[in-house]
Image (tube, rainbow, N blue to C red; front, side):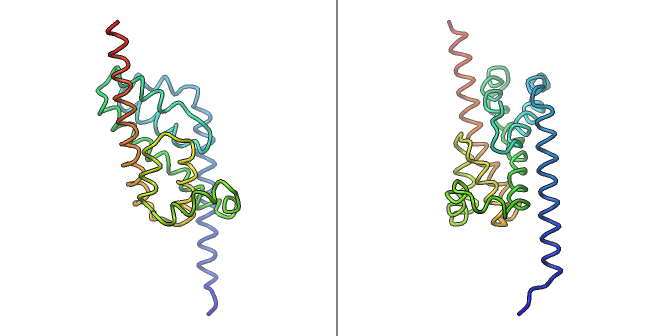
Length: 184
């Protein structure tokens, strides 16, 4: 049975739009990354934006966890964790879009080959597990989720749960550290 050329065209258009969105978001994040600290003065919405921008950078490091750690000494740690988890999960959309748009480019890389089978086998559970620990490789899991066509809502929910776990222990660690330092 022959493949439908309309489906191929739709897939190509979706990949192109995803790649353009990924490039646009990445350019925006790099243009405002030096001003991320300024957003913290806006409280929880600022923490949300910092976490979103930090997570939107694919592969490149950003100051998100450091801000969460520090802001938990000023604001309630659970509020910081919740705002940061919401922002970080939404920011991970760029990796997901990169997976949809750049599937052919990344499929042949060695490091991607390590993450793809894990995400393929465990799906959303893999996303939760990898998002819950601080590691620079979660972007690869996001890319794999997009390339494997994991439903976006499942990806976003799993990324949020994992980010909430991670941000909670980072925020409480920051709160305890600040309280400990102020005790001296």
